[in-house]
Length: 384
Image 1: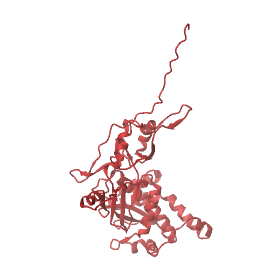
Image 2: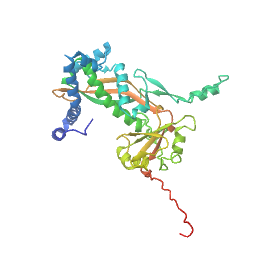
Image 3: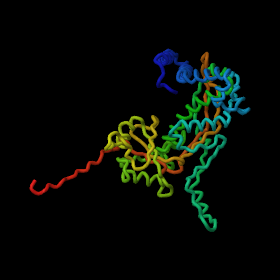
């Protein structure tokens, strides 16, 4: 839910609703608050889609420019259910979101999220997917059991049907009354937003028990409660010089098995300002500031990254998958007059190829870049 940016009026209304609700009606009040917050947070999107639909109804050229999708029969049937959510989606009759919608939504999520562009997304209609390093082993000679064992050690099956990802979605009446292609436009926008946040959190620090194994966690080592152990946080990374990043690059190559030509640095916004930028940028002799890194480093700044910790990683070596995405009405509460609350749930999982895909470090140890100063001594002439 987006709390940031809400008007004080909405915040006060939500607070009053929660404060005044009797103990036996707290669940109702909480869900009504979710509806209120979600609808307020997406007010601009709602107005935009409604306005687009109105203009498109009498402007064929504008409708063409919007690039609306041609919906399949399965998708049309799914969105038709939104016309009367109470009858078409109930606790007893759960609708599965068509895989075309999920695949396209995940494409949108990857394009919109700097972090998730680093992830390989498995197709939405599979229950197991292969996780393997790009650097496979090719062998000439007899195909022996030893060779087969060596190859299979590089390949792991990702069981996608293990963990559940849930998101609350509000479908306003103003949207449900539009033509199906505009219902699709709104639904995919809020679904991608909801999934993006959950997938990013899972990618970074999923505990492996209730969600994916995040890059801040170890793949093969667990705590007593069944969660994956956190990776050791390096305190030795202080500079982005060749020597300062030598150990990072060596780790990311997985002992020389893959080439690393670009680094991605994931950090918290506060740490970017206080530690990362002062280390990465230095004053130029001609004035201004320039990136002083010797290798390409792309910063990815995200509030889901914990303060004080950052990670160097590479792209294409982490796989995520979702399957069986469903929606059902939240029937534990009274629906608001102009909106219905539904819950989208799906099976999801994810993990990196190996632990060396990311190096977690203490970002507070980074040192500010200082422009080297060379002192020149001019020898005195005789007689001076």
